[in-house]
Image (cartoon, rainbow, N blue to C red; front, side, top):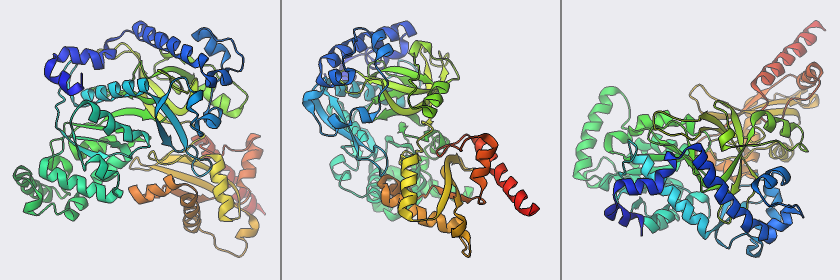
Amino acid sequence: MRFEDKLKLKKQEQIWQEYCGFLDLSIDEYMEIQNRLMNEQLTLWRKSPLGKKLSDGLEIETIDDFRKNFPLTTYEDYADVLLQKRDDMLPAEPVIWIHTTWEGGMHPIKVAPYSKNMLEAYKQNILACMILGVTEERGKVNVKAGGNFLYGLVALPYATGLFPRALADEIHVNFLPPVKEAEKMPFSERNKKGFKMGLKGGIDYFFGMSSVAYFVSKSFSKLMESSGGGSRSALSPKVAVKYLKAKKKSRKEGRSILPKDLFDLKGIMISGTDSSCYKDELEEMWGIRPMELFAGTEPTCIGTETWTRDGMYFFPDACFYEFIPESEMLRSMEDESYQPSTCLMNEVVKGEKYEIVISVLKGGAFMRYRVGDVYRCAGLENHKDGTRIPRFNYVDRVPDIIDVAGFTRITKNSVQHVIELSGLEIKDWTVIKEYTENNKPVMKMYVEMKPECLAGSAVSSRILKEHLSIYFKYMDHDYEDLKKILGMDPLEIVIVKCGTFEQFKKNHGREIRRINPASHQIRELLNAQDQVFAGVRAL
């Protein structure tokens, strides 16, 4: 039975229990589901050629055996099989292959197989997100068929392209513009068309990457003007009345017309890195608090907030979850041969940060897989929504990756490659993700030029930024999309005195981290620069 039929034929409490019942679980009940599904997955995986290849003769009978003996994995462990789309090697036959960036500019795309059962779980969990995105209390199912969905998603073969396809199988909604049309349109044209259609028929839901949702919402006034928003023919009678009132009110308050002035949004769902940077402003622009969910190419849709918007809960049927404590994660980054220990969902500690490790259930390919995302445990129970299972806040990518607004995968190798391509005489560098006064992400790069480069020439931060940005865009199309889609260039350059990095090494007995050094290390780097200045003045 389709979800739309269930809305007509079943009671709300039945529908709630089917899709959102995991929120009623105790931690012991949650772990029982995790263990049962993981044992089923292990049976499939052990029999598959991929499982035999990766286990390399290890005796793995139980989950405990698996966690003790099978090492943590990264995409390199699967690349030779998955990039060739070797269906015959997998635990279950794939129905579709989903794409994403591996390492910007350095490697080909990553691909991930989705089995039939994985897709069924994905549909179930996306519908749970939709229910939770529009409800205001436990047990209430306020979803209705026929709503208008503003289209803010990247099309297949990327993971967000699954969302409209999954909904289409279960419930009728109107995407603005229609999916097949939207997939063929440039980003800016899609936004104009979506808002133009919304001005005629209204907008009920909005789902998109958080940074994209912010950009689209911020550009609302311009988009409306360019789509003829002020003309009578472009507006429904209901919206026309709202438009006149909104125009008068916005002029009086000295601001632009906001989406909330014209649309009565039922729900806004967002995902992606840096979502916390955009939530408050999205709420101000649309009049309701966005609901954050977490979905990725390898893990599928794994987490959602509830009506309290107070942290994400992980679906027990998407992946088997392990968590690397922050201290273990950092140790493994310093020593690549070190295998960090993990804990399970019933062992996490409130307030602690963890790198997540997944084993994809229901025939998935990835086992004990380091996705590269860090979460903080926000609590083990929540009196606001009556839950008794842990909830999490998304923190960021792991420290050796810089992801800005969900568009980049900047690593040590990719930065070094950019420098080499540019031909710039850069002797030393480090780059850190920081946030502006307006809480927006930037990528700040501290650069030391070679002495011979500085002699007789005026090298400015502006010139370096312009030059390096060209090569970041050339090497990484996702970086280029930051400018093309969001109108932002996140790179900031700080030139430090010659000898600064060497002085830092003398002071601390080691080099500074290339990617995301701790904030105290940046302070120590600038202190080292002061020492170099003092030494020069003394001479």
